[in-house]
Image 1 (cartoon, one colour):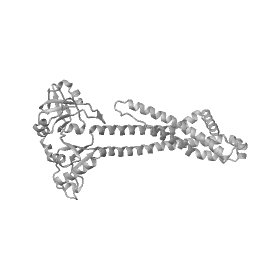
Image 2 (cartoon, one colour; image 1 turned 135 degrees about the horizontal axis):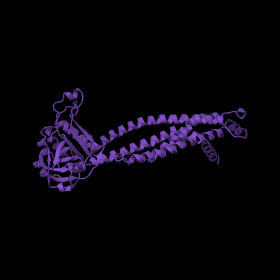
Image 3 (cartoon, helix red, strand yellow; image 1 turned 180 degrees about the vertical axis):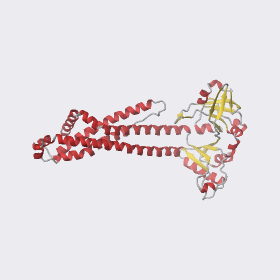
Image 4 (cartoon, one colour; image 1 turned 120 degrees about the vertical axis):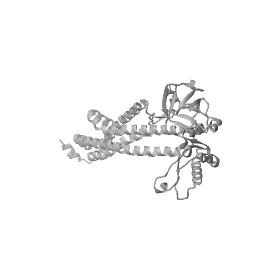
Length: 404
């Protein structure tokens, strides 16, 4: 009953000075709105990146030749990765289910009739479809014969069809890729885009054909590989590293002349970046919170001064110090709670508006973010309302009654 009476009294005070109360809690509103919005956006991006990585392929890894930085890297000989390395990975790494060469030359000029466009070209093997989850939506994937014979065949992404004003009727027809005539044998399923880069904007050709067009990649090819299971990814990575180090004749004190990247490492990198971004934004939110808290403390001190005679009367009829303390703390918490509730509503509204943008990911506000926002506002009321409440509780009843 006492708590309910204190809350009712606090609400009455806030309503009496509603404009002052509204202006006072602006800092808390901004802090809680920022918290809800930032957490929602980061959670949305994290889920989006996780789903994107799953779309890249289950248990996928990428290997490419790379000269390490520093003097140790300069002392290494030629940095190479060729088809024999790919064959060795498939043969001698039991934790690797399949592997494919990956040739990525500069964007190629692709032409169909009078329409032409520059698009990314990838030279791959038949295994690439399974490794990258590149399902063929129409037509067929590359056959073993296509790869071994280096046939002039290609598979198009949906974005390429749109650029060249084509439809599925192009299957069996021909297009020009870098002035070479290729027969279209398949069309990839739609995969969407990531950070503005469309995964459907690609032309796949057999890697043996790509090497004829770009022979410089014969010793500079990359590799995509797939581990047997999700748990065996670290083991597969270790086997690839050990195998390539032996094949490249690297001693124990020499660094790798290649790099291996797994999906988990990409996700860990993104998570590290998101943590840094969260920490920076948390600092900005903290400043808003301090400003809001100081505003609450200032208004509560003014309120104590204005109601000094009321405090004296309450003490004269038997109110204890803790009753006065709880009364003003309740009022301070109601004030900050009002800011928290407003901030949560505004945060949800901003997240909903952001999700409407076509290039924005779905913003997800987790329940714990709402609890965090409300906890921040309530904590602000307690911390910054304590000094005015203690001041009111310690007032001498006689002096308070004499206050003009």
